[in-house]
Length: 310
Image (cartoon, rainbow, N blue to C red; front, side, top):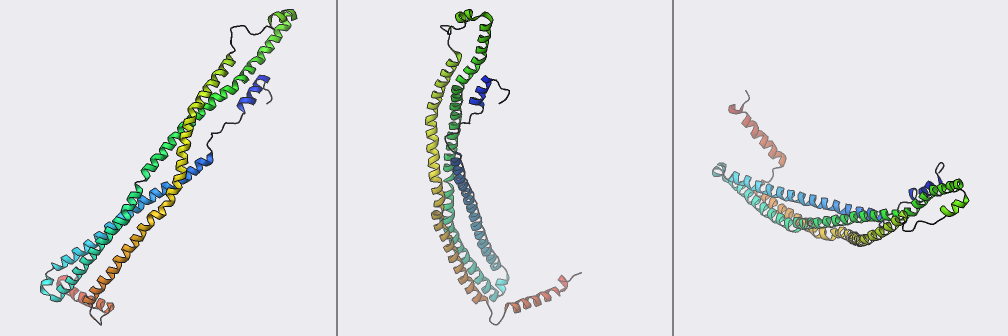
């Protein structure tokens, strides 16, 4: 450190370039906490989205079956049912099938609501308590950092007190040597070699003692705050991975129930529409033949003068 006087060199060596004191909790702990909490935040978002999508799906299922029942009821009220017995029989069979479908669909939705949507809702209700525990931990961390900085401040003052005293003494000693040379050795021995004046206290010694007392007090304040933070941090680091892992055991029965409900529903639909097909189907006619017959009838209708193009 060229160009720096002896007294300031002492100050720079002991204060300015001294290593920064580290907080007693490690950055690795913070990274571990952020990683585990990040996984739970993602799980919370996925759970809410799944619950919302399941609700949309069941609402759409109910709307579909209700619409099918309404269509069959509208057909039953058509005047053609009064005029054509075969048409009435066909619409009656369709109406019966739609009502059976709606009943099974309602059972499926109730099952999904009970075994999937409600468990998802209950699982989501846990996250507010978890987030509150994280907020309490964050508040404890901020208190910890604040008091830790306070301790470091007073400890730094305690360390720099003697350095500042030495820094102050360097020019003072130079001044005393200059005055001794000016007045002669006989005066120096009587005037400049006496000790400090009785009753006067060294301000740097007093400052150091004060800093030592404040540092001790700050350390005493820090201890319970540090213990509180470490307890909260340990509890969360222990329990967050367990909570995250438990999601598999919790959701597996719900998803199994969802699959069973769908299998039962579509098995019944296969039977219902199989029976309906047997009632309405005319042997020996393919779908292609039916389509051709419909096109022929549509052509006859278009040939009528009332629907002819101008």
